[in-house]
Length: 340
Image 1 (cartoon, rainbow, N blue to C red):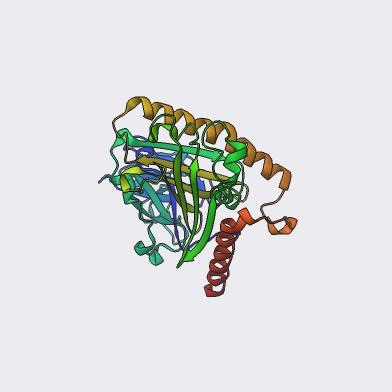
Image 2: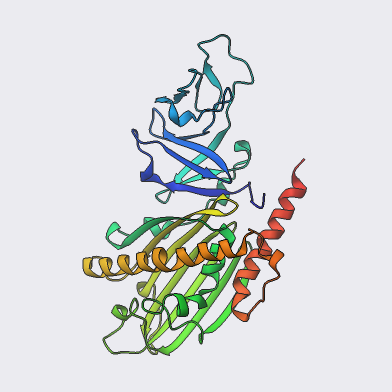
């Protein structure tokens, strides 16, 4: 499968798993049960009993132990069987356990061998922690499209001028655009000078004013992007106080379905409930009513998760998306060569 394994994937938002509420989520086509153990930390086991393959989530959770609801085999936090009511425990009575970390209000799961989990590769999303809840908008959008196809959508923001004309579009096609690579990252930037701000940007500048708008997307493998943007009056210098920073994270469920996590933060109008409501509605409309339907139609039209197999026409606006795909392909090749 066309997935990196030795990396961290967002499994969900931390508040999706409570002491009384487990979470089942399929990642890289593996069903995983997430639940909080006796001490409140999150435990993750493959959601499939090795006996008759019933989902463990259909059983009972008690502290650090989950008991299969079909024949009563019980498994501990490390995946080992801790009870077999029908006889001795054998070495085959084992389920895969995953390394899980809770950080930045999210749950992160390492999909490779747990012993190889590299905490240094956890993404830095400290901008979420630094933002009060009144200035955060969090969403989850399951989408029936390949994760790289959805990442392309963020790496090439020219689509906003056509797909989102009434909210955030109208400033990208004619912008000064650049792309570059820095280590594992691909960075795309757009500078829209002396433009009419789209409706979502208008509250950030004085009424009837034109604006300079800066937008940047930083991609890191396999499909996490941080989109930063700021609107200033023409000629005004950009400061951190102008900026809105948004997480867009594409996590593969299967080859053609994706968990799309989004968290928008801002450093202006932090306690303005009216602006927050307007922005939430604008984002929900753009993602749910415009992006999601188009991406799902695009996937159905393609009929494959392999973009290159269809020999696409490439435009100048594809530069960031193509660089990200090629960097990911190189990482996939390196990981395959390193496997025994």
